[in-house]
Image (tube, rainbow, N blue to C red; front, side, top):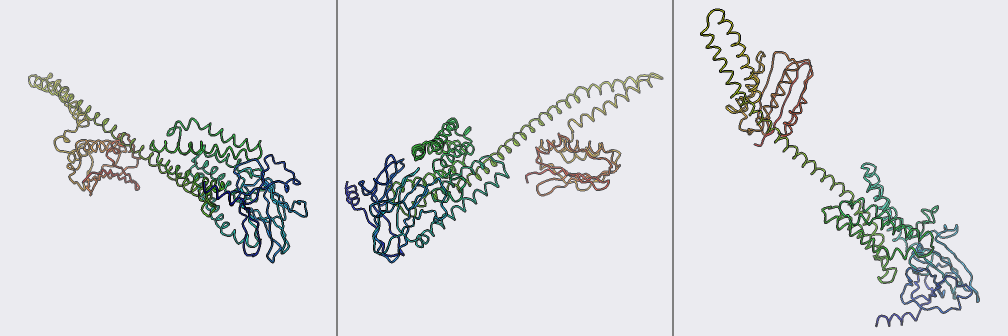
Length: 591
């Protein structure tokens, strides 16, 4: 109550401006104003109306379709006649007209509309500078009429042109830094999109472009940058398009279809809200669209944060950067809006809150996109590792079952067929011993044939399940395999390190099968009758090397070989120099 009382007392004394020093600027506080609700008050009626003093140092009527008149009385006690009326944030104003009272009439000395380009003689600065001339030691009265399609706020001061430019130095420097960084973020993410073809980068570019455009708009640069698109000089249009792109970006970045199903379902509603704001700005001039923005920004806040939080709870870690980015944007714009409504003080922090809010949003979301790529890359790597592990487990089980089946067949051949053949051979041999003459010779041929069959069965048994593996181990089994295979070859043996202790039973069998299949491939190349092989133990692996001469191409792409190598995490290398081929199979082990 005391604050309101003090405000009421202060508002009763609107300040007139007394110009004394040309090196200073003079702020109009608690200005006298008149609201024109229907925007149809004639200039001849204005000076006879009752103007009341503002309750705040800076006049702010919020978002309204009405126009406002401000009356200023200026006493020039300086030695300079050329001054300027400066109104900050001119893009917020849809139109500004300035009238000067001469005798008892008002004459218009300046007019400016946001939907028209600047005139040739107008001072081209982002703040509105209106030239006025007041003779020394005289008093002048001015009337300013203003309307806005956003928030109607009139921070007014009287200054010289030189002082206005000197005071805008820091603001211009800040604008240059912020706009430069925004452009850099845009170019960087454009290149990333060209390289990766990831759609979220494209939506990010559109979204950040229009929020940057909104920053250009609020700082008065848009008419100069996009003079051919002056119709875009409206917060309603810019924010509506930015909001629409933010919904598209949100769904693409957060993958809401999977991570936030509820917010994915209502995305079309949010798009319709954005389109509604845009159509209102196109078909209904004035502040109607900005009024919708002020009311509908809360559903967008809920949508952004809700989708981000739900995605984060489902394990989508880049959502934390999404929440921080949009949170920075919301906080910056909220602080700026509260400053415009005179709820927060007008200082450097509140005046630049839209700058740092937009810049932090662009920076954090740019980092979020990089985090998203890293997240999916790690996720893809985990899927690949899981797939490889599942494949390895499957191969291990499959090959174990194959070996078990081969062992079962080998036992059946040995215990049944082998024993039957031995029995037949023994009876035939006994029959031969008991026979005489020609019958003895007739029995000899079947005995030899049975012996050949038994030798062939032993070969099959050896391939199915080498007996050396169970009795003597891997090293001797390899020696036996090579000796039995290359019976008519000149075999040169180099390193023959003992390796049984480094591999378990299953691993030893896989190694044996790899070498067995590889030797079959070597024989298929019809090599010269000379073979060199070595078994070399290293610190954490074993090399099995073969060297021979052949003119044919070696086929070493057997799926069984590759599967067993993958299971053992081994590798095979083939080097060919002229007619000499060298093969090295490397199998790692745990020391």
